[in-house]
Length: 238
Image (cartoon, rainbow, N blue to C red; front, side, top):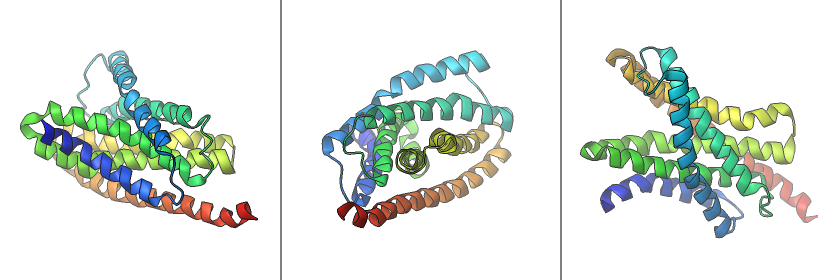
């Protein structure tokens, strides 16, 4: 049991430590813990909402027969509810947080929320597939958990841009739409395996490529926000 739990939690823990090490001015531990707990806390309402959406739109459990089915399942059942609740959790964490005073902070707190959610989701997947837990844990460590990390980076990036730089409707929309789009594409490619083996194989290859590109985009967002804070530092000290 402890081996399974460690395998499920380790990917999120490593990414959590990674993003914290990138922060030039670390956030208070209690605020980071609050963000992680918020991500964990939204798991329950997400499960209920996803189940309700699935029942309402698809009459129960969905088995993708076409790419359109896979896309509908990916965006409407998974991406939109999950990223919507993550944004709600992020807003709750940051709305009265006096330490939210740098561009990079948005990414840090969003990643804490996203990885809190991803850790619980990973535990559920690993323990639901005990007979094949090694392959499930490995595949999710390489794809799903880094995916949630990247979705969170996108959300945190645009959240900070809206808060500090540009309070436009377009920027506000990107706070949710950017992670939903990335999450939806990821899940559509992952769900393509339900259609048939041929399409699933192509989908898997495209998914690997998409994940590599997504991590590169996430890293650029991280670098850009750190640089913004460095550029503004002299003015803050003047």
